[in-house]
Length: 471
Ligand SMILES: [Ca+2]
Image 1: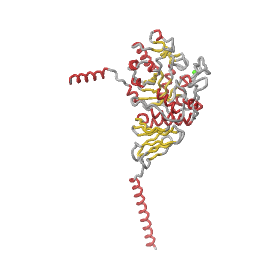
Image 2: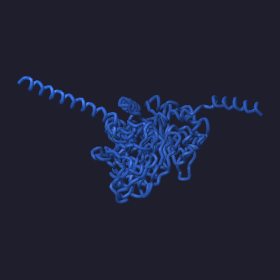
Image 3: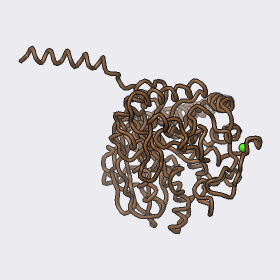
Image 4: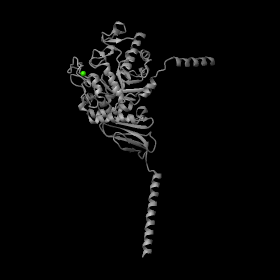
């Protein structure tokens, strides 16, 4: 029996070395604290008119003229907001303006620019210390794609052409596409939409030899998070945060995964705009965005923010959720909040890397604690009245330093900490030892004063004696 166990141990350790160890945990760890700005390239900035082909700016599905040169021109705008990574819509030659119905995986779409312009974009971004990733749709493709003839695809119920799992051949082609974009374009990683269209095994095999790139899987089924992805973009969380914060009321959100690196957003290119949802619910989108973003940044390791959020941009009648970006319309309050949250991720690693623990959630008021290098407290009041959240688990003699509204909060006489927030506001606190009365310092000040007083008295006495003697 013992010999069997020994053999099993040897076998399992052999297996450990033979099986490719997923580099995902390590790569994912590096990405904690990143904040990502998502761009639908055709709808961001028209950098040059030479590539404006068949523009239909009045149509929801028409080309609006945005391109790679436009993104490059606006890199400083994104950098100034504090983002560390840019996530681009697919750049491959495709039959739709968004780039999701791919015709040729190794060609840049003529409306967007050339591979040289992609290179320029990534180099200029790297010079500004920002990374660039691209959405890589592998499941739905154009009808004329060569994979259809090769038998790599099947038609789904609604007539779309989908890649089916055919094993080695299609996987080899996908690996070659990913390395092509890494080498030619200098990209730092990829986002993969619709991952649930294939099995976890498919992704594991396809992505196993992709190294030094970040791979973001996006979906609702978190069991896919372990299928070779470095970061898991949680779609169910994104739906819930949009639902909870587009109006006031109770905050009901699924707990983000504790393992691995998680990402989410408040809205995305394939959802309705949060700005419009909050307007429809009768609320001020500026106030709503400030709350939702604070919640998003604190709950997840990586925050994804869509182009137009700083305005905040809504849906446009007849155009839908992806109108052309309006650079002139930027709202100061939302911009300041995005700036602050990005700066906070940078200054306090605990903010992204710490463990989140919900400590209070009642009637729209929520408080949670983040334990990391530093302890932090996040409070969000999603109700229409002033509320307080009670925290008992911080220990004695602490002070809470507010990062959003500046100011200190101290322990009450009953030993609890009461975080009071006005309606529809949020704050983030750093938990520090209370300064209290520092007796050593008081002693120092008193003795300095005593020495001075003695000196003054001595001088006065001396002067008087000299006066008396002089007369
Ligand atoms: Ca253009």
